[in-house]
Image 1 (cartoon, rainbow, N blue to C red):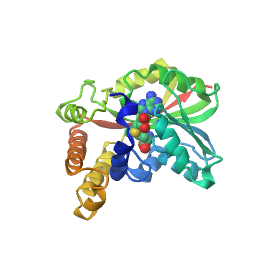
Image 2: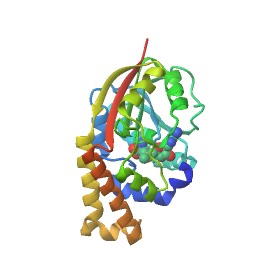
Image 3: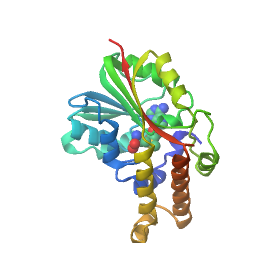
Length: 258
Ligand SMILES: C[S@@+](CC[C@H](N)C(=O)[O-])C[C@H]1O[C@@H](n2cnc3c(N)ncnc32)[C@H](O)[C@@H]1O
């Protein structure tokens, strides 16, 4: 299945039940603030690669007084995120559909390009890296939070199991592989941060939210009981993988030279 089929409206409702309204990756607003904790975001023009339902873009626009364009391969999500854009952000937030190969933006227009929980689903990141470099301003920052494998560039038991359960693929890439990729595309690496500790906490919170009997009636609007069990099993596999280091949550900050 391609990504457009996988991210169906029903699947996205299930992700929102786990991650919170408008969110399709862990940690809610705390994780977004963590992503940008040393990044000068105030008043920037930013691009969000893989903007999903728009929750991250809305928070960034509000919290940092930024102008944000969300980029999505999935056409219905672009329409859905536009529909959900709050009135007070209409002037500063927009959503655009694009494929990897060519983005509909002029050269050198973004101060910051970021991506949260997306690029692990993209096997060949060459086109995206080229487009990031082309559309960033000189001196602009690329901020990526992604799910990595260990240095072996292979998943172990837990993530292989998760990839089998979901039709969604995570492709294994190591920290050193990522650094090489950034450098090959002329980015200057600024920092690499291991986020496994907060990510374990956020994943545990999701498991507890999905397992909580008080939430069960609400969850059964979105999942049938077997689907709910399968989602819980998936997050438990993720938690185990984070604990053993099979899965790593890493933030990279890289700069386009002047
Ligand atoms: C796990 S969701 C994360 C969404 C959002 N970043 C968040 O944290 O809520 C991954 C999203 O990336 C999108 N996506 C995957 N590959 C993409 C690509 N090459 N370009 C743009 N969006 C992509 C998917 O359609 C999906 O909406």
